[in-house]
Length: 85
Length: 224
Image (tube, rainbow over all chains, first blue to last red; front, side, top):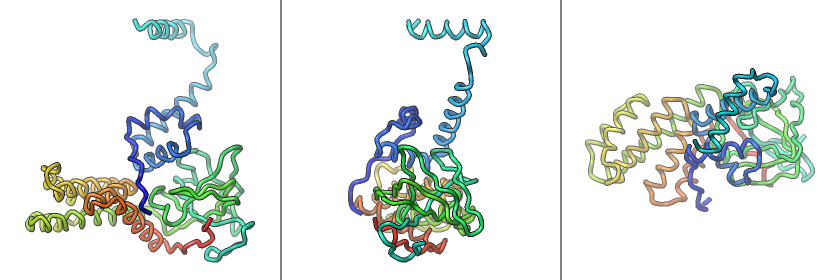
């Protein structure tokens, strides 16, 4: 085959695409490039594993699972994040 | 049941190859493919609104993983550049000759190809002594060190650049990341020849290596 090959994906690019990859919304070409990068890169594979584990763990959390101080800390962090302060 | 080497009818399932992680786990989806039982194939894997993917022999170097399986795919198939997509698939048998030693040997073989590309370039550029020093190492780590020492002016000389690729390929082989070693060597082939098609020629060599090592018969059935 002599067609030009798409450039290999960099680790930084993969990190940016990971949420869309897990949501299954990437176009076929981009998804394939992400998967081909994962085959080559144990670091990104481990990152994906941790990302999946985090998503899975947080899905199990309900609002009532959080103590009031933890809830307050989180809300405070989100308030500052939104205002940039 | 179609033959692995024959051309079945258009309505019959097709055979292909599939790499999985240890325990028949899909490397990206994370699901477990059902195991065959005795001579009976595993249960069909089918996802709503999503296809399953498998390899022709030429696709194998793109998808290296610890386990290699022969799979049966439901039609209609869609031929993609580096894989085949199907509505459903099931495992037929594990290719037991694809094991840890084979994976290591594959990475080493790819790194050796990168070494050859670098040695040839060193000789072409009149660096016989450096070529000899790159021929000498016996282990992948020694090769990595020797090649790295020759890559200090990689931006200036093609031979040094290729020594850098040989160093990286040997390092990945030593780490057991054979897929990366293979990819680096395929990229080195472009540098060595100046021809982008050299990448695919190297991939073809790699797929033939795997097929020969594992005794994989060409699957004519995969002409989609």
